[in-house]
Amino acid sequence: MAGVAGGVGITWPSKLSAIKPSSSKSKHPLSPHFNGRFSTRLTPLSCQSISMEPNNTTHYEFSDGSSDLELRVLLKDTGVQSSKEIQVDVDESSLAVRIKQPGSITTLMETKQLYDRIKPGETIWYLDEDQLVINLRKQDQELKWPDIMESWESLSTGVFQLLKGTSIYIVGDSTEINQKVAEELAVGLRYTPLDTKGLLETFGKQSIESWVNTDGSDAVAEAEAAVLESLSSHVRAVVATLGGKHGAAGRADKWRHLYAGLTVWLSQSAATDEYSAKEEAKKQVYEGSESYSKADVVVKFDSWDACYAKAVAQASLSALKQLILSDKKLPGKKSLYIRLGCRGDWPNIKPPGWDPSSPTSMSTNA
Image (cartoon, rainbow, N blue to C red):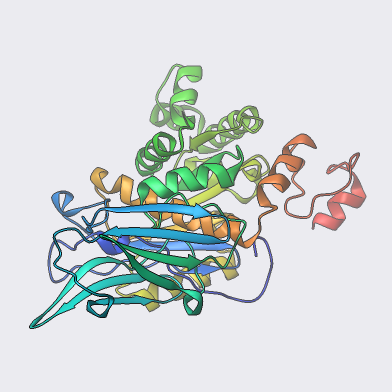
């Protein structure tokens, strides 16, 4: 669906449900997907309350056998005597295992977000000595599952494979937020972290603020565009860009080399619920009111602290995973765009020899 105009599909990437609000007034996380662009909205949190790991502590073994998944859950010390005491509930994206014994129901394992979708009607389970064996059928048989559930670890492994070396560019109004999230993504994906602010300040031998005061924001945006051009041929990199009006990403005519990778727009939102944030994100994308609306992925949040960086990074990985699964040719298309010289013809790549500066091409682009 990436780059296709018209039509809206909504999904909600996972693991944000593991983040607990710091007060009853906190808002709830959300993450719509539309037109190949994904948006996640994060809530104000206490740093101590953030958990990126599954709450489930049940020991299990997992294997991906191509079309079928096998999950083995240890039943030792649970007191289970027969299959009648086991309850397995599944739908396309969730799984719960419960033990029903006289006077009690115990949740042995539960995940509200499987790594990808399954065919619930083809689920089979049985007891094998002290283990519960659950066989699940994948909807996408070509997708390799690193784990049964979507988590930071499974996303880091899975998305690394899906990206096939495609770089990621972080854009948005805050340079600091862009940097923090880019650092987390780079660590998780084992990519090279790059920072246009640091590169520009090293090259210009002055701070961005000083540069803006001396030469104006247009000069800084031009300089960053030149840096992005030099980085566009890099693979396996996460690039944090300048935020706000000083950055190249905030200008519609500076996206030529940003299209070389997958772009993640980090955006603060004033919405108070899932529906409002979803409508806000849809409106921004359809209207194209901001240059950032060109991005592939949108991650929304209503407040910021550095300790949220990993949560935002995980939401970004979840959305990137869904984006690539919706168009598995996307990484290859990005590679082709780079090989042809990042001519600005994304997403409708023209044949070799196309000249974006020719009168005909300029007229077509307009």
